[in-house]
Image (tube, rainbow, N blue to C red; front, side, top):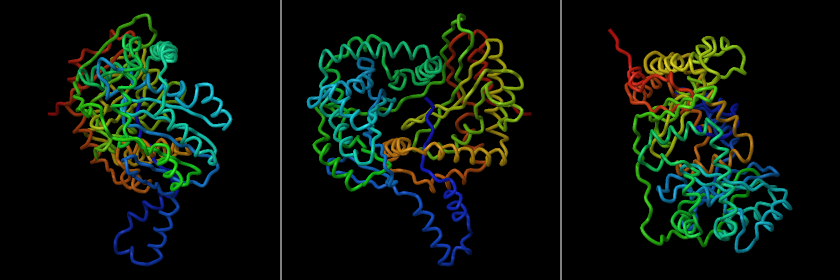
Amino acid sequence: MASILKFSRSFSNLKKIDSIVKVSSNKIRGASTQAEAKTVLLNVPPTRVTCLSNGLRVASEDWGSQTATVGIWIDAGSRYENDCNNGVAHFMEHMAFKGTSKRTQSQLEIEIEDLGAQLNAYTSREQTVFYSKCLAKDVPKAIEILADIIQNAKLGETEIERERGVILREMQEVESNLQEVVFDHLHSTAYQGTPLANTILGPTANIRSINAKDLRDYLANHYKASRIVVAGAGGINHDELVKLTESALGCLNNDYPGEIPEIGPCRYTGSEIRVRDDSLPLAHVALAVEGAGWTDPDTLTLMVASTLLGAWDRSQASAKQNATTLARASGEGDLCHSYQSFNTCYKDTGLWGVYFVSDPLKITDMVYNIQQEFMRLCTSVTEGEVERAKALLTANTLLQLDTTSAVCEDIGRQMLCYGRRIPPHELAHRINSITAKNVKDVCYKYIYDRCPAVAGVGPVENLPDYNVIRSQMYWLRV
């Protein structure tokens, strides 16, 4: 659920780049220094971007490897739905693999298996993604298959009915994952009355009623060239990828059958939702405030603040050895079984906070300690803590990008969110430029005296009253 920015590789190179950025102007004079800077930057594979005549963008990073990941990122998700068709984006993702006008489902599966490739997809609140992991030599075939399934999905009645049952079973599985349930409730209360309040899978009534017309209408209104990015990473020749995309997706247009659908702002509301179920052994609670959107300059600072809160569970070593204040308090006081901070970003808003699992009698103490840590971030966080958090954030985001799939996902998502791929040296410089004062100022802006959103599931009788939680979002000083 939690969205974290993922960027490129080579942390050692980032250290060199950062040292170059910090050198004072009177030292950057020799040709050798400039040559060194150029060499370091060249060590990072560039992300090449090409925009086709129909507005579709192609972005890739060539590693020269024998494997590759290519995918189609579409600027469409559950946020673009309404109460009547909520769930149609996820339903369409399922239907894409059930055969096209060129291939039956069986033929599609056999072709992928013969390549030794993998074909997958996922739907989020703002994006729908179809991607394939394959050998570099099979990229042309992968692109052709991906283009086929998003343009020529068969949408037969038999296949729709079969997939309807699959999605209903998937909904039952999600309902058993209490973390997913809590975050869905958190969105429903924080963004009540807006599309972000809807779940990705949609309500059961909608799943039972969605038909072929609903799916085709959704495709006609959202799968448009200007809202699509074809991304690739690994053994990818960019010029060849552009030609393949032009051939396979060049016929896509930006014509709408009716009015152009617009995405409106999703209003945040400080509020709470409690689903009390004393049959559950543990309480699952999320406490959040409104955060920043992807393009907001405060986003990285909030990520550093989230790293300062950290994460912990009982399977880890003694909490006394943890550098995070909240982890030490949680472990030594036996306040929870686990907790994790999160910073979920969308285009124009976000949710920033902490999710924890606790014994019913410990909820009050855990909430108190979380809010005390919120206030400390706003008023008295130290430079040493911030330096540690910056190093951890940089390392974690870069170390995650050690596969072609991770880098491809990063390219596609960033192209939709930012309109460009943020290079690693820029990311490192932006993170390293954050100071303790920046953290305090940004946390004061987003946390101090703000109305939180609270979601609790399970035996939550001891979860403090909302007014009490709200009153702890500031400190009275004398």
